[in-house]
Image 1 (cartoon, helix red, strand yellow):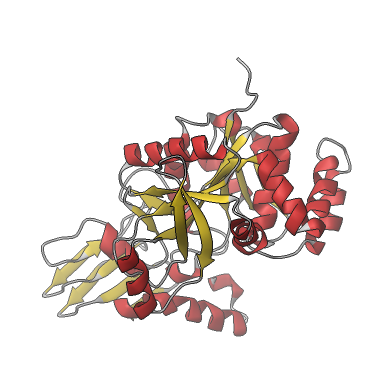
Image 2: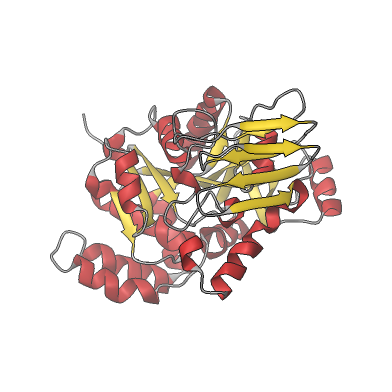
Length: 369
């Protein structure tokens, strides 16, 4: 059985999840954590969802030097060569472009899907259906996204403005990528029925994507080409070390997808499968099971502490130190207890937790981040 023209899964696994500090750290970011009450981390659950489409030998993870060992431990079935290690973060276009070129060396006709390592999906079968539709659309030559049907006027996501349907649907052309809107604009988007959330899920033929990368970002394409040309040689690490820091630091949305959409080359498949971007502790309090008072306890694989709550409601507690966490007469809080740091904040300030990380960086307290 040949892999020619097969489907390959790519999981960009970068960043440190600063809005989930002090649980998520630079050395152990959120995708390596158990955050859903299951025995699988976010990364492992992402891989599990894609197994029907891509076995381990056709699955790649792009990650940083600090996370490569953790990724390998959590994914023992993944071939070592399928963990692509970035010497330094250059944003998503360099990471995805590197994976596309490595895959193209093996299978120039491959279809590639890129799925972030830190998303939640509640309805796996619906997700599989959307991926199948996206693969079919990508085989027609479109750079394809899986857009999420909005459930509310969310201001934390970018949006896709859809135009006409393709061959009777469900795929539609994408006319424009939109930045995160104000609440008023988000309401207009949702009420119009013409917009989907941009979930950062991409499916395309590597040939079509690399052609667009060369057209729009020739310097990035040239640099990656030089890196991958040395991939199987003894000079690989030397070449990566020389070229990687010079690559443009830009997201795939800005670098390729927005320009491709203006040229009529981007399609989207709408999905409704209980998708959530695990961006902060408030979000975990919304998507995880809660008690009768609306409290959520986020337990992990390691030994956690006991939680004692009296007259407390709508509070998210993350007990990870082994100590008792007691909450009395409080509401709408986030309480995170780790061995070396404790976070307490209102749930409506959960997005601002990254400000604490920024302040710790300013103070030089790198050991805490």
